[in-house]
Length: 115
Length: 111
Image 1 (cartoon, each protein chain N blue to C red):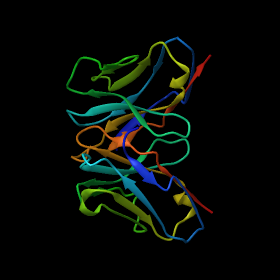
Image 2: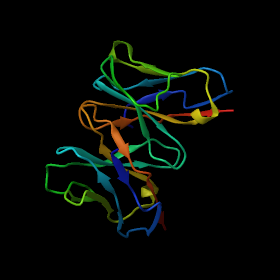
Image 3: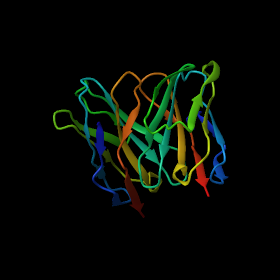
Image 4: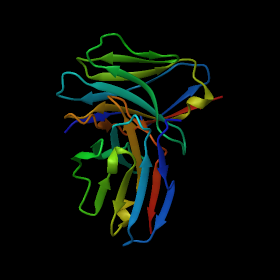
């Protein structure tokens, strides 16, 4: 079965600092997408960033960037200049097998940004 | 705001009762997904619609669960004879291609 592993259940970072959240995945697909979603407390899941596997260039969205290592099946998220509003559960997800593009999620990393 | 809405936001029911949830994606979302999320876990895929056709169902979707998407617009997820193990957040997501946009979810509590 396809799996996504987030080995850091909780992380803490000081405001304005940089933090990296880890994610590894397992897939037999050759072309696929990877995603990071953010779920603030009691609020809806929001897309943070996505990466196409065939693109070697790492995706960047403002303060958020990824380090995509296809051979190692690693997809980490770097948050620069952390803000209090970044406090949330972060989920890594990969596309599952088949044409439906269903997502396989990790168990999440709870990030707390400290003032 | 992703434009995907879900109703109700919270539902408390007694074991054995039937419940129905609704998801309204934006009109451009030809793809619609249902996921279930239990405490401390990531969402798990339940079922997928492309327009009005239900193209995939997870093994998690027992016979007590049924989903519809008439006319390829809104979708409903019904759970019959609810069990305490059905208590979870039920998330709906819409999309056009490879990216899914989630609604706020319906939190179900079965007493």
